[in-house]
Image (cartoon, rainbow, N blue to C red; front, side, top):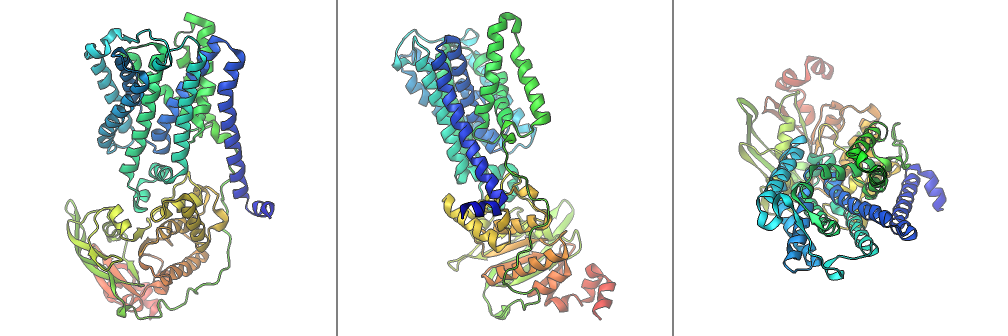
Length: 603
């Protein structure tokens, strides 16, 4: 039965195969890190593998911020330097570097949060430039505080041999410590990647606005990621300084080392657990062997090697070496037509008169201007339980701006949005997280999938808003995917869905949040007539499940079939409100939006 189910779903079969290859590769690399140097019993080989472990751990720690969260930190050796100096300074004071490990990590966490919180406001290359600037600041401080760091001449560790001081005459204990550090970073990375925070980080990296709409506190999860990454980086920095027995500012706070750390993750596979380890296993030996064989003649050769490898990877393997593992081809054809019992597109919108139901949202006197342009002008309306409220109007009427105010993405200049909570109390949320918490979910005019995630993982991001456990979120995602007729593509990457599939995926992600109010922004734009009819049926099912809906829509077939009530917006002002067939006959609406041809056709 298992074989039959797998063969009937090639995406699931590919996902299972990829997971197995992933685990086999990771186990093989970890075993090689210990078996090869021990079996060869050569001091230089030991050094190479200790260096591999150190840089694999540093790259894995960086990958939590740079790969999972998508924050290109090029000044990450700030935390390496803090850990290095913490270990050596405390050791010179007679304190074991085992304690220095945690002192440096604690300081690094504080510094990471202090630096990152303001820098997260920067976008694109400006964040990376800011981290480089902070790196230079710390290097300058290390040069200035000579009494602590030794200044430009650096600092050496006292000659104290023994486990307490992390100094040994043999290489094997140092290899075991380095291996323990890389194992620790991999375990932490794997845990983050496979739990809710990992999904949130990737969602934030892919589409921050969509993540906000799903109730993700993007700043908070990024701060958690940078704090964990800084602590791990500092731990490795402490050990590496003791291993080298010497540290100086240019090496401790080195931009070159930061770039090397990033390089290993890029070559191996950015945003994957195994990628940084794989990149270090391949690149470090090449560089170290070239230095050993060529000596002084190879000065700077490692930079040439790294540059050449990076260029080849960028040209031929943009997803890194991990991208070579088979994950299955994304779906590019039309989604399957799945016949399911449901409400016909011509069904009546509601069995119980909407007017008799309680209000769930009140919008009062919303005003919003951009410069001298008034986009919403004294907009007021209400929404009742189980109602589908259509919002129509010409392009530029202010519909999406209104939606942004109804979901916390844009604060009105004046006016208010009130929502009746589950306990019956009226509340005034302000941020996207507040709106999500109170039960308001929204889609976007242009579908915003988390492209690097599967269909199932996309929907799980929404499900995590109510269900913290991964298994529960996965079950909710699968049930929601089945409702939205996305079941056959659960294990396919979202980037491969058709336009209709992407629209349904976005609705599914919001429905997994278990919203009470659903804001649909042109979910039928750009899809064919067959998908329009299917979308109408699905929206009616959602309404019948107890969800109130406000829908921006240009497809008049959908507006007429779905809406209990229609509001027409023009130049930021409500010009008509009422039953669909009455509104479309209003001369003001015809002139502003529908056109005389439509009025003649209705006559």
